[in-house]
Length: 363
Image (tube, rainbow, N blue to C red; front, side, top):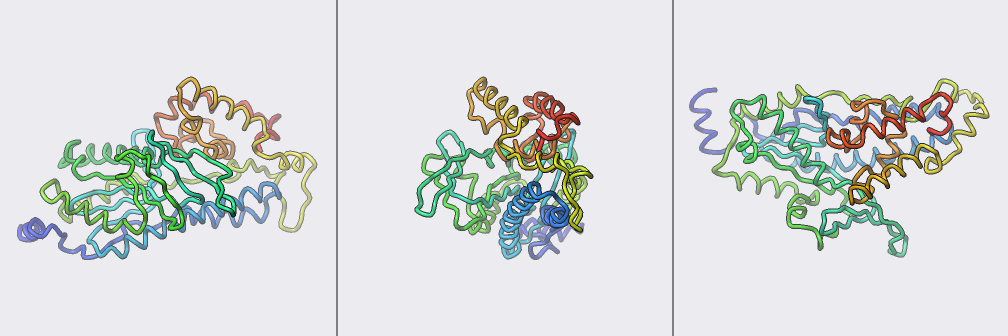
């Protein structure tokens, strides 16, 4: 890089050739999943087709949220690099990251949340989703894994990668430039933060506040560590080098076998398949055993059950039936720490019910 180019960037705080938001990666793996599920649903048994349809709806909802964030980033008019939908693998650790934004003054890790229902955050940092009826009365409360904690773990993984592979960065400098934020992308969702700690409040924003938040981050680091344009691209290249395609085995995820697949021409299901697929997942033996383990473990640790794993994660365990730590890490929210604490017990239950004689219980 020419001396005068570097001098100009030092004075202006802006890259030379990056003049607008630039997507280095703008792919959405969730959309590819939806496309595959739409094909799979054509040949799936009715009960499993119902589950697939529900997954399509949830994935589509998440895609809408990511698209909202992508729109805001695209129209920020900031000279930034953007990486969308990264699945990072590094030294046995994994992370599914919605967005990484690279500015001259910061690297921002964004966790996008588009949820149905309102959100309440307790003084202890618990995130509770509230479901209301048509009259506005709460009929269900469901704890969810803290997206703030989840995104902080994403930040730690990126810090490990960059500190190991960039001589110009060390933990202190990473602390200057690395930031994380949780963006609630559903404009209709009400997030009650009255009892939340100051740290949680700082770590969450609404989608329409994102641009202002990024501009504030740039200004606040006026005299700190910064990246020239070449450095911005190097960060992007390093992260892309550790991105892997997170492939899902849908046959395993939904417990499908060749015998269970219903031909589009209208092939009949066997009595065994009909009997197995008609059982609600909450009534299956594997669901009950994993739920019982979660309850006992939560009481031992003195935490809420969903801290161990949420209902959604429980259902995904049953859908994926992981038999190793690596397979368990494919489930969002399961990193090294959670796998080391609970992985052996979960895998033991999975293997017990994955026996050919117990297939009916696994649906």
